Amino acid sequence: MEERKQGILAKVNDPEDIRRLSMADLNLLAEEIREMMIETVSKRGGHLASSLGTVELTLALHYVFDTPRDRLVWDVGHQAYTHKIITGRKGRFDTLRQRGGISGFPKREESVYDTFDVGHSGTSISAAAGMAEARCLRGENFRIIAVIGDGAISAGMAFEGLNWVGDRKKNLIIILNDNEMCISPNVGALSSYLNRIMTGQTVNRIRAEVKTFLKSIPGIGEQMLKFSRQVEESLKTFFVPGAIFEELGFTYVGPLEGHHLDHLIMNLKNVRTLEGPVLVHVVTQKGKGYKFAEDDPLRFHGIPPFDVDTGETFASGGSPPPLSYTKVFGRTVVTLAEEDPRIVAITAAMSEGTGLDRFAGEFPNRFYDVGMAEQHGVTFAAGLATQGFVPIVAIYSTFIQRAYDQVIHDVCLQKLPMVLAMDRGGFVGADGPTHHGLFDYAFLRTVPNLIVMAPKDETELHVRYPRGAGVGVPLDENPRTLPIGKGEILFNPPGAALAVVAIGACVHPALDAAELLLAEGIPVRVINARFVKPLDGELLCVAARELKRVITVEENALMGGFGSAVLELFAEKGVSGVSVRRLGIPDEFAPHATQKELRRMYGIDAVGIAAAVREMWR
Ligand SMILES: Cc1ncc(C[n+]2csc(CCOP(=O)(O)OP(=O)(O)O)c2C)c(N)n1
Image (cartoon, rainbow, N blue to C red; front, side):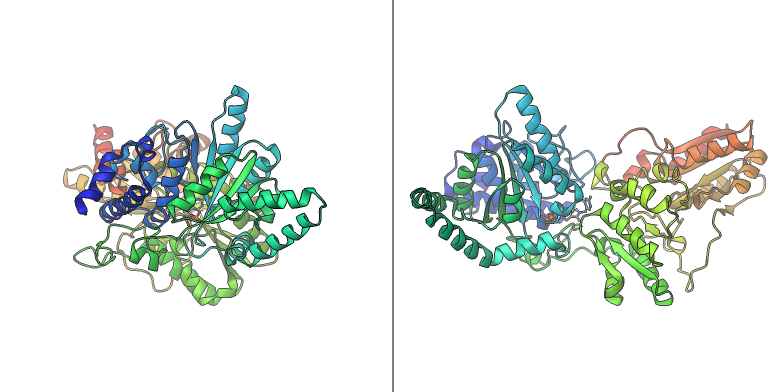
């Protein structure tokens, strides 16, 4: 049995091989793919539950459609592991999310089967729509299929895409992969609507209504009814309840059972023949086929390495790791909210990821999960702020990029009080370039009325903080108020003749570097800048004038980032004759690798900072 199973996946190198398989072998292949996925993710970590839920759907899509000629466009892309395995990357699947290995998301440079780079939600429909226009302009005739989850379709962009596609009437298929889950259970009116569809009540009611209506049309009605019954046989549910989508200009097909290959293949073959925009509603189960992931899809959404037999993640040996920034934030918000009833908290589908789940438990009436809708979340918070509430909006740095205009136009322009707590500031590690939070210093510091701060460790945690564990410093029982725009000198040995000015997660590595250097006879002053804006002008200008050599360190894009702000300050204040070197991320997208590897690569860990100091010291 084992040998036979291995045999099928071994024979599959691209979708052409799949199209030759019998239904029985396809089902075995699905099993083998699940095994490979579980095995690999248990070692590498990754988005297991979502990808387990799309095994049959992916096989059916590649079986029925002529990929790569037909374009398959994934939304978010975290559910595309089967797609990767059967499109020439089986042999490299073991390198998933590792430095130099394959990405956890579709990536055009990796394969011709990856039609669009993804990581953020809601892009598939618009990207597919662009491809559809290009196809028309060129007079070509391939199929385009966007695959989007019930969570991702709540993104504003997805609605914009639906609005466009329904109107343009071009051939385009949207597969709505509905597992009723976002990362946590899905929220929103559309999600409830899909839910009602799945109960089947609406299906039957509308079917009955349509049939009565058809029968009432003399002559033609009877014929249409007969025809529709035939089509219904194959499409299973022709008179469907997707009224919302139908009204928007789509032919709705579904709900289809997403784990029966024969049923999926038969229906997709019919869908392939339909003209105009089509929305196929496929019902899947997140975590399908692996008990632990089925039972706890939230934990297995994005999971670090784990034991396949128990489903448990591996505890790091030795003393317990420091608290994560996320945990510290989650606790602090609860403490603050106990004292201040004006505080409300908002997340965009990431209660657990941002640590707000604790707040949600304590203050359910003051907590809002707006779904994968960052723009809405920020402006919604602005609305609350106009009424005297103090919203704490917790969104990962990379996703706040989505709500840039809302931050400018709806919050800062109106001087509304709000805390934007940006988790995952800096490198995120294995999720890679779509998810690193490397631009926020640069794009936020230009906005008037905004204070931009990054804590050096968990005690200072406030506005933007990195992924992962804190430094391990003891937490202040009673958080102190930090004066706005004030930095601090942390290390100032006698004879210091160079200042390392660091911000956020780079402060502790700068201190470590300073200790290394002191042992070599190189005394440097270490400054924790704390604020990107307003900068502590006095502290920084005094250091520059006194020491004449300054190195800035940040885990952010150099262009327009913290170091640039320091240079602007020196220019404005007429500080001259000072050598400045900026350490950070140059003008490129950082790849996926561990946070440690990336900090090493970009020279912003203790070793890199020390090396930069030595060079300048000479
Ligand atoms: C703009 C944006 N916000 C948040 C996220 C984080 N995120 C990744 S997957 C996910 C849930 C996706 O749910 P769904 O689309 O239903 O797919 P499923 O995982 O259930 O298959 C979230 C919130 C993201 N990738 N992009």
